Image 1 (cartoon, rainbow, N blue to C red):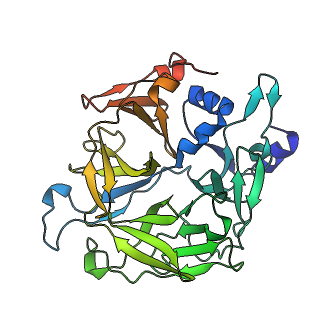
Image 2: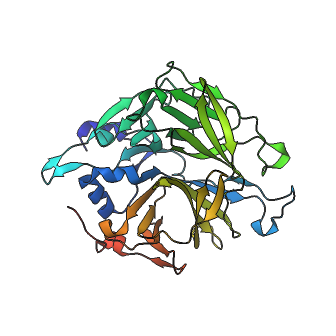
Image 3: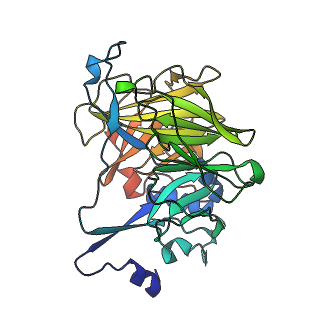
Length: 366
């Protein structure tokens, strides 16, 4: 990191500084991505953690079924400045290094990674930035953000390279009014505010839907509500409309204290991965994977990933073909503290995976 970058990250007197890096994956996998940038297409941005207000075992089909609320993320405490940097330096050879922009221009936080574009908030809260981390440049700056509106998560409907005029950016607010903020790249240079008047069938007191997770898929946005209802958002006749909703609730099948969900796409399908904290609040002890079934928009359980494996960090999710990477197939690796654990889809067992940190894990660096 250069001297100027260090100065920018230096805290004021009485404050401490923290830098969070993304993607938060094993260093061996980051090294492989640096040499094979096409693997960036397998990355998704983070997940969302939810907790039950009532014990899931009390759940019943009545209107008194338990509801969910956000589970607080681990913070750095008071007086802490947190900046975010992109954690991969792409290279075409041993001595050819480039891609220093994330270190020279640390962002205040990242909002999402969608269709190869990284979206985040710069040091000035009203400034959002979209970058292609592979080509090492700023791709587009959307209009200034209204800082009175919360920004929780962001996705693109499709890759801008596919159809620039039809691509739109969606920012989830985590509230119902406005539930979404839209910006269409081929349209006016302005944010479009969209409220949600749909009552969430699983929320108490006839509350409207609040969206916390989303994915761009086939030119549409599939947004997941806080209570586990999925909706489809489309741009039709110059308007953004919710055109469909799921027929089942997206929650784990077992009781838990809380759980973390990752909404990802892979091989032309949408999956939802749950890291479930059944017994302890700080240790996941179960994993479930479900797939979105079309056209009913219902969730069906996935019992095997075949030759695929998933890595789930605190703010990252990535699919890999195990044979190409050298890790175990039909597994889910997930981070916990300073280490990684492995969930075997076939046996249902969780075990420590020290090789992720010790370097015995593959390598295929061709």
